[in-house]
Image (cartoon, rainbow, N blue to C red; front, side):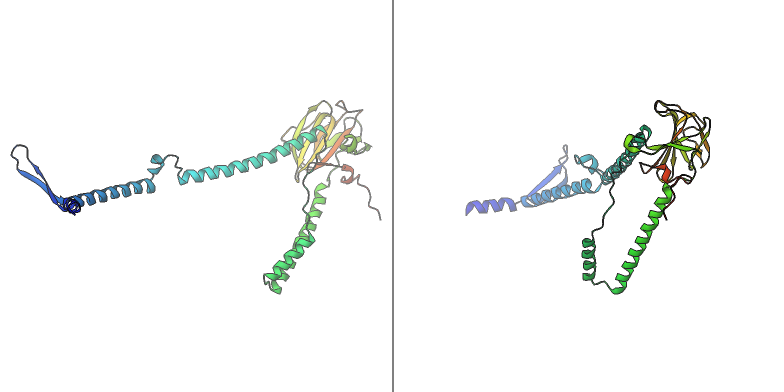
Length: 296
């Protein structure tokens, strides 16, 4: 029993700390206390210091410099924004690359394959959807509104199809003359050849911007015009050009003089191509003066 009593006595025994002057030994300051009090005070001071340190590091900008690898919220948001912009830039770059690739194929006389397939609605899936809507407890008014919206969408699709037909049409003929060579993509002939006197004027078939006006070995003097609706008109084997890249033209404007330049030319004529959505179309079907008469 002696040892526990001595231990308790040592911790409860009070001590006094006194500060004296060196010369006169005059008492200047003193403090009294037991060991347990000093220990408690030291522990409280230590906990306070830890809490203050945590507050300074966790809730002040100092944490950016103290904590290794810490990324501030502002930097994190900037990184996310930068990543989103990079993804958008990559998507835009992919579209631009696809456009340039299709344009190179157009200029070289190759056929552009459209690999986008239209979506097909599954009737069974639609019936399951309608069943699910009924199970949700939709009223007759809700179902009637849904049917009306579906009818409007159907009419909008029909209007879009009619607009597409109009967009493929060619408002103005490039030249008045006889067709000497028909459209035949199977042999790489993606347009039609018009025969007319040498020196005849070639006209722009619609309003647009000249994207190519130069000489090529096979096509001779060539003019390409970009029109609205992702349409491109191509005019080859000209004797001379009347426009430059970047010029804005209107339907019927003079753009070139008929000739027979280029290695693929067999004589004076005008080779005309009509590309819509990256696909070569038969211009005869869309030219106002050359389109076949509808059957009665």
